[in-house]
Length: 611
Image 1 (tube, helix red, strand yellow):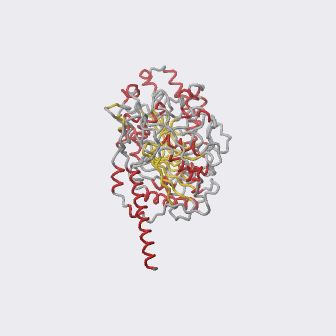
Image 2 (cartoon, one colour):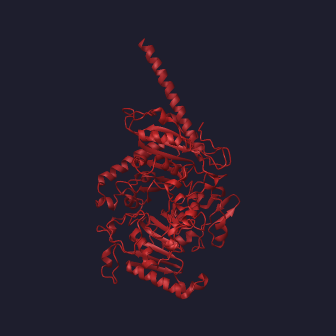
Image 3 (cartoon, rainbow, N blue to C red):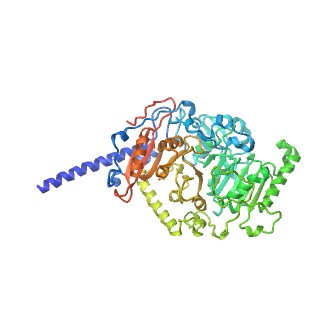
């Protein structure tokens, strides 16, 4: 009797195991089957990887929700799926906080109207932003650097307006980016090599760069060859879709402008800042914009100014500007650079390079003495007005602490070793690194294409110490590390010290990017963080859907009761979902939810059913 009973149990368990494996393989198919019928088309890499997946290695995973009490259950009223309908087709490129009609109602002085101006609660859309007809999966890097499907950003104005400057060309059903620019007619490679003869880009000491007024971000695109990671930004202005093109190419970029509000980056972030004919009035407002660059530039960092007014004596006629005006503009820039105690390292042709001093000791005797900012927190920048003052050097500024990349990726960052972030010790940092390596390895066992190159543009919505991005570090991808403005600890400076990039943001508002600009989004504890805030889980999920590409993926990590509610909402948004146990076992209350956004386009089938 006992033998028969055990045999039956074994058969039952075997059937269940087969069911689980089949279910997993089905989920891998969802992850991998990017190509859909209809207007759009995808690549084949995901499908090929999926074909090679060994489903049996995952047969020991338990997908049931194991949790004490009833936290993992929902009553009947909570199990109803709310269906989110598509927005009207003309919203395909909707950027809520940079919407053109709203922008025009704000003052033009100091570019105020090009800054973030978000809709009120009553104005928010509660629908799904559609992809344009013909939308295609972007090409894999590095091909994406040079080619973008026309249907993904169907705007030809730049091909006419910048035709002689070799920015962008329209060829059949794709845009081609030759790597040219206004200030580098011989190509970005030649221009960068010229800069590298002065700036140490080849030894890892320059890793992070800020490109102001980036255009289509060819400078940032070609810096990848030097293993330099650039944060590029440009306003949403008459040069339509600059930032959209940058992200379609697989280059980090956000919509932004140097206007009245501080840049959303911590102090001492970047190894280099760059302006190539970016049209920023550097000498205006008592040097306020140069002082803001100084704030985000690390001690020993470089500032590159290429274009007017540099070498105005030779170029004023070509620029069609009065000699006197250009002369005064350069005089002001030189004056402010001296006030900031920057050392001029180079000037040749239309390019000048300054270097910020490595410590304030070199500047104590300078005359005149600059106005020092009164704020005790140089990283408190979210919606804070820019000031015409100089950010003081940190007391513990030690240039010898700065490591070359990739050594600095896992070395203890200066902000941690100096104890400047309460609650973040060296031991806590090292443990965080170990934990995220384990988490990412577990992710790769579920999503086998995570490091295949299919996900180029990745976002971490609650980046912590940047260890998720560090564990993923690869030339195939980059991570936008987001530091929520309500986070208990501000560790974005640590992320930059590791040679990664990121930005401050409040997830109760829309992110400063176009729709469909990220391939993979990682959400660790975001919904628990915003549980009792002024926005709902629905608001955050709709924004995630807006910025996620069709067939893009999301990884949620949170408490089981939170994830159950997120999963219910996601199912009404044309997302396929699967919840799995924590890698340490089913008794851990934290779970992981994987989701894939279905492919659909404007004017197509409007059903959100995933059947």
